[in-house]
Image 1 (cartoon, rainbow, N blue to C red):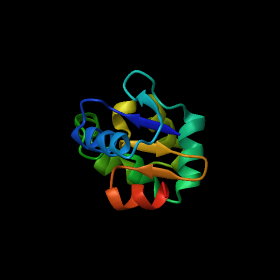
Image 2 (image 1 turned 135 degrees about the vertical axis):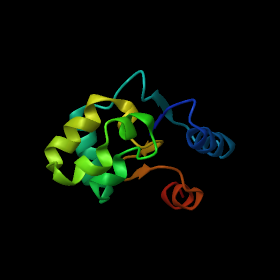
Image 3 (image 1 turned 120 degrees about the horizontal axis):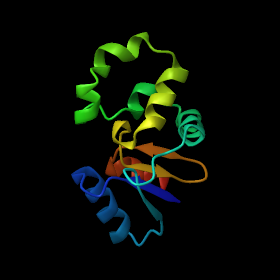
Length: 116
């Protein structure tokens, strides 16, 4: 299982603490150091069943400075996927990747259900 996060993010810290307290093994990947590839993001998007907008870090400084709130609606899925792959700071985190599940963000209930 992969745990993709930004270590300075408080939500990522909460999710990591939860995983550690439950004794769950994972590979930690710092999204700022190792940006997800276009292929990875496409795979996660398909597996998740979530709208593509859910993969954007809408509260991030880069998202806001690029004024993506207004621009995303006019972009194709392919353009949005390429944008996500261009900079890890645009990607909502943490992302938990298992063989069968992709969780974006951290909700304890979702983690509990996915990792039973």
